Image 1: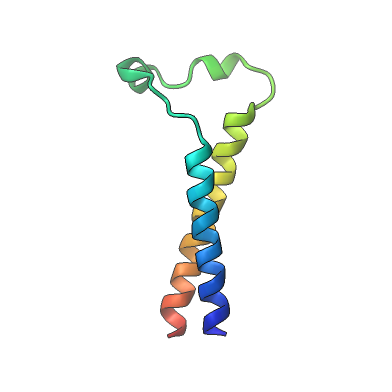
Image 2 (image 1 turned 135 degrees about the horizontal axis):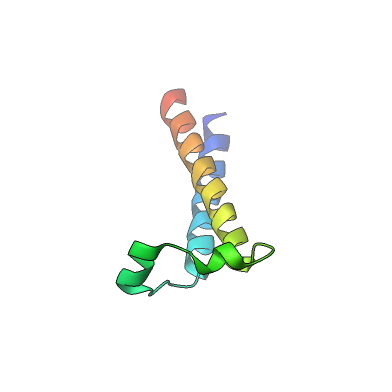
Length: 74
């Protein structure tokens, strides 16, 4: 059982690394820090970057949960 969770943890870590590396860098500078994402407020449907950010969030949560499970199963 412990080995299964370790394999799942490694797979989720690799998936998270791949997802983060596929995201575009945001070089908005100080304007992006202060102003936020005001231009996305006027868009209709969420774009590819927004969907990728959502997938990244859930992948990170999955990795953290699996890491906690692996730690407590020992």
